[in-house]
Length: 232
Ligand code: ADP
Ligand code: ADP
Image 1 (cartoon, rainbow, N blue to C red):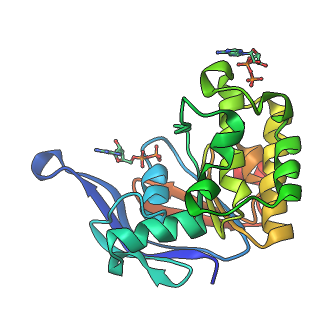
Image 2: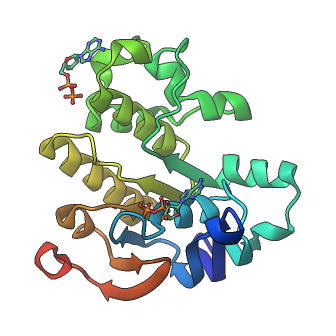
């Protein structure tokens, strides 16, 4: 059970004539220990799906299970704890704390939880993301790409069972992007973590085990063992 799944998940924003059905009865699985990509046109509901499965937004109807636990049945307090202990996020808004250094931002989830990072894994993450020279810098002293890498390091360092990544390679040059995808792949293959990643990039999707295609709030296709040319 390190995966996540939804059953007829529906999310409606607004009401009356202004209502937007961002997700329409989506039933999908992100199997434990697998790397799943989510693709589809802008407005298809990809971010909404990630936010609902990650417990950051309430569903209008339907169910979300993370590691076998149904999110709808949790108190806010237990939901917060589940997010902190089991889920890692890499979103486009980096949410780095401006007064903390890169290193303190990276280890913040562990500081909050009163635990310490595994030194070897922290070193690996920092090396692969080429953040070694920047650990003492504050976010305002880092480029956009570097801030993205700090946010990714923060998500990886706790080794959460499931990682949600929204366009994690969007701001990165192709070499760093390939390394980030390799790191996500290592997290899945080496550590048995589960990754769900929204991307527009067929090359990025080619690193996944499966691709879920969304359009107009519905799943329109699922492809196993994707390759960039088949995804296009
Ligand atoms: P994608 O990530 O595939 O681009 P989104 O999940 O962001 O799609 O959006 C799906 C639909 O829901 C779009 O029509 C979008 O305008 C709408 N939507 C997303 N977030 C909100 C919100 N907070 N309030 C109102 N409508 C929203
Ligand atoms: P990246 O390679 O991370 O995409 P950019 O192309 O945005 O970086 O920036 C190139 C270099 O300029 C980076 O290595 C970074 O050190 C530096 N840089 C960018 N933005 C800032 C900033 N706001 N403050 C200090 N240095 C910056």
